Image 1 (cartoon, one colour):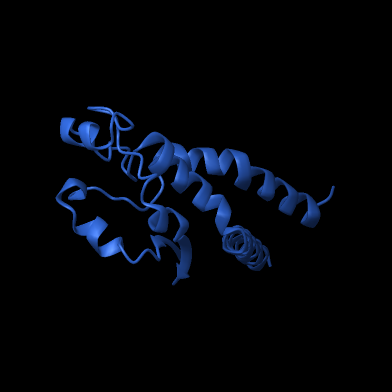
Image 2 (cartoon, rainbow, N blue to C red):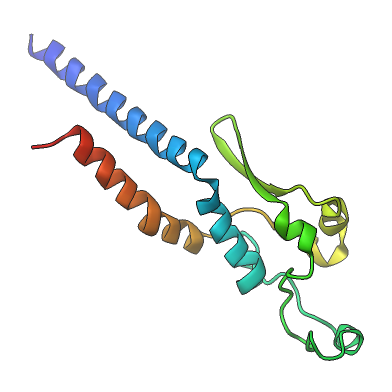
Length: 150
């Protein structure tokens, strides 16, 4: 009888973990702007990719062409790429979140030598940690309280 009770407890715990995992996934799926907020922060404010590497820096030529709006050695902000920025979206495939852009210029951006080796889409460890602390932990606490009141 004790072996059966242990097996039942084990299966209940596994089921609860799966339910919580599913609830978190569904929460993010229903709120894709949470993920996009952090993606936009990385690309358009911090000028970094998913690995935390700099997107690149403006040249003297760009400084001259932009009449000083973009200074030499200033980091790329991707702000000028309006359709890229407006086209950002989160798609869900096989229990994964995929970030991309619907920009008609996406191929050109990804094939640009400047961005070779960079991972434009995806969250850094820091962004993941902030998303977890700001959004997921409060969601999980609420989810647990709703199901397991003592």
